[in-house]
Length: 296
Image (cartoon, rainbow, N blue to C red):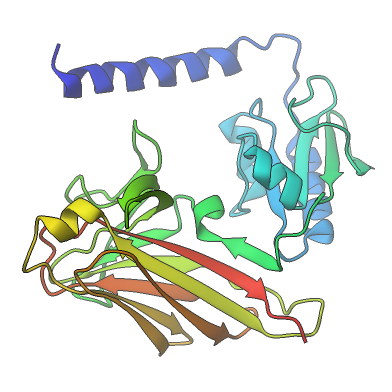
C-alpha cells in the first residue's frame, strides 16, 4: 500500500475516533458559557511567568470557544514538564483528567468545572518560556517577501504539528529529532524558504518576579547529512526582532554543530524569530528558543 495513502487513512481514522470519543460521553453535561468564562477568569488570576495551561480533552469545540485565544492544550504534558513547570488544569468534576497526581491547590468553579494548580517540583534555571514545549497553530507563519505574510501555519499534520497552507510540505512547525554533530537533538523544525522568511512568534513575557532582566537564548543547527551532502550549502540566519527592531542575528554556516546567541529582551512584548537563507536547498535546519529570568 502506498505510504502516503496509508498515512491519510490513519489520519482520518484518528480524527473519527476522536469525534467518537467526545460523542460517546452520555453522562457528561456540557459546561455552560458562563462556567467556561468563570474558568478563564480564574486562569487569568493564577497566571505567572512560565505557567502551562491544560484543559480536559472532553471539552467540545463549542465549549472551548469561551477560552478565546488562551494558550492551552488538551494533552498531558511530558513528565519533565510536569516536574519542572507550574501547571493550571481546567478539569471536569465528573471525569477527571489523569496523569497529574495530587494538585497543590484546587479552585472551585461553577459545575462541572474545577481549576487544579500543580506547582513545579524542581527548578528549571529560571526558564519562563520554551518554544519546544509551547508552540501551537499561532506560532509560525511564512512571509514572502519578508514582511508580507502569505501563510499562517495552522493546518494540523497527520504526523503532528502544523503545516502552512499553500506552501510546500516541508514548511511546517513541529518537534524533530535530528542528528546534529553526531548526537540526536530535539528541536523545532525551521526549514527556510528562498525569497521569504519563516517566522516564529514568541509571546511577550511579564517582567520576572526577581526584578531581573529577561534573556532570550537561541540555538540553531543543521542536520549532519545536510552539511556533509551539500558542499555549497547556504548560511541560515535567524534574526531576533522585537518592537520592529532587529536585536541580534544567529548565523548558522554550513558546518556541524549548534550555534548559539543570548540577547536581552523587553518584557510584555512579543519576539519574532525570522529565519532566512539565500538558497534553501537541503537546509534541514532546526532551532530552540528559551526565555529566561536572568536574575538580579
